[in-house]
Length: 157
Ligand SMILES: NC(=O)c1ccc[n+]([C@@H]2O[C@H](COP(=O)([O-])OP(=O)(O)OC[C@H]3O[C@@H](n4cnc5c(N)ncnc54)[C@H](OP(=O)(O)O)[C@@H]3O)[C@@H](O)[C@H]2O)c1
Image 1: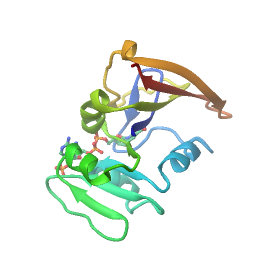
Image 2: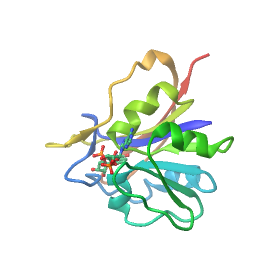
Image 3: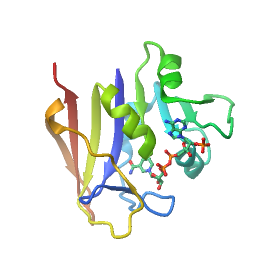
Image 4: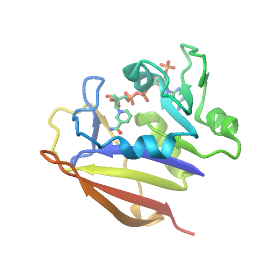
């Protein structure tokens, strides 16, 4: 299964000045639950923002300039290489923009958390895609000061 996980604001922002522009307690639980024991793929900048491999899962960084490696950490040069590496294991594409754009035509499922926030001056956005390619279901709501809704997009057919 090729999955994609993202959280986006109401105006489609996913990043600002190299960071995710909100902090919501508990919001990242789904990310942990889905990716643990599986493969998680991220662009070099997203990896460097985290700064270390996430535990208990295979971290695959996509980069053509650096080569991070270690326990549960590998660097590849393309999304296709990451997908081949995962073989039959579940793989989750976790950003940023370029990887999402390349992955959307390939994904079976997208876990999109809609953050109830308009972010001014965002500099990284989730790519446009054709919603009609997917069946859409609504998952849990959460958050206190900032609310969010989980959406699951499953490719039709
Ligand atoms: N809200 C969310 O769910 C979410 C998720 C992830 C990230 N973010 C945010 O998004 C921002 C980072 O995203 P970004 O789009 O700027 O950067 P990014 O995708 O994390 O990293 C970009 C780098 O990754 C490598 N790369 C990406 N796609 C590639 C491809 N198809 N083939 C080969 N290499 C590829 C390149 O590395 P080299 O230059 O080393 O070749 C490229 O410069 C941050 O603000 C972060 O907080 C938000």
